[in-house]
Amino acid sequence: MADFFNVKIVTPDRVLYEGQANMIEMNTADGEIGVYAKHIPLTTTLEPGIVTIHEEEGARFAVVHSGFVVIMPDEVTLMAEIAEWPDEIDVERARAAEDRARKRLTESSGDIDTVRAELALRRALARIEATERL
Amino acid sequence: MASMRDIKRRKSSIQSTGQITKAMKLVSTVKLQKAKSRAEQARPYSSYMYEAMVDMLSRTKNINHPYLIDSDNPKKAVIMITSNRGLAGGYNNNVVKLLLGGELAASKEDVLVYAIGRKGKDAVARRGYEIKADYSDVINEPEYADARAIGEAVLKEYIDGNIGEIYLAYTSFKNTVSHEPKLIKLLPINVEDNGEEVNTKEALMTFEPDEEEILDAIIPKYINSLIYGALVEAVASENGARMQAMDSATSNAEEMIADLSLKYNRARQGAITQELTEIIAGADAIS
View 1: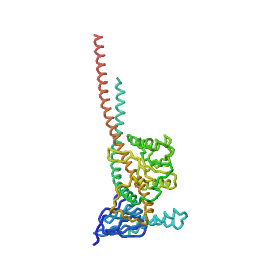
View 2: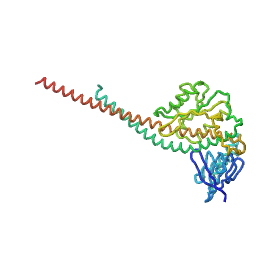
View 3: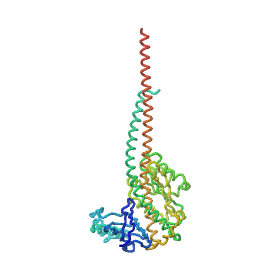
View 4: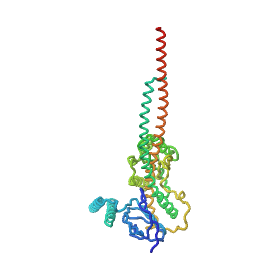
């Protein structure tokens, strides 16, 4: 059995999660990674996606949009600008956002708009996926 | 001695003022509780952010990032957080004083004010400061998204080279009775100031994709978190200051009412005595 380590998910308006896990999966700038205890110290940025916390009694999912993570051998701290549990997500709104983003991408003009729409789309998709896993 | 009618009028006017201040005190007490818990909830994020920043900067000393080097542009942006409403004692004035006195006072024309809160905005605009932007509506119900919008606007100016330094003036909330106006420098970040003891045991930190990109991503978030923290603390301080001001106003009103009641009773007794004397004198004259 793998060792346990501390996991914290902190957002500007609350501490979303604080507890012990033996593995955590997240979506970083370089792709999805899974972290066990005694990981080398690493700081990296987070992309919109699902964070899976493997606790002793099972896995928990959270949705994290943009932020960064500081990984230490005995502790992982996620600092996210927005993070939420799947049951807090408004699926209707996420689907509407997805449609809006897709529409904007097909008829896109400026570069900034494209980047924004892509980000919005990824956020929406992460939200929808998380609610489906619930 | 003032007439009975005058005293009575004065007393009832103070009484109604006292009622208003008492109600305002109750309202700000409730608001303070709410704002206080928000400020406390915002604290972990800010402090983790600060730790992460200090940690990173201590490891990346030789990096030449625009966020870290002093620029020779004399323009300074000041994000000033005050309130939209008065009657909060010295709350707004103390923040304005940070701007008028201190290091920023010397070069008024180099200061660009990003105002949050009408009271402060009006006060510095009257003194000839340039108001670059006004976000006064934000202070009513500050959200992280608001802080991010302000942060992004200021950072853009900084990156474009229009401003050389960014300051944040707000009232930090220590506890219900103690609030301290503060002026802090957001950018450029002085590495020496933050370069505390480097923890050599964990000094081997990997950065992905690389240090510079991480700094690029983290510093704006750090700034935003500071702005958000300042906003929620300012709201808590504002309500705390108003509560105190209204509390002392209420007790002043009570004191004045007691004083006026005494005067009123004396005047009434005086009038009765005078009337009696007149009647007795009249009766004496007839008999």
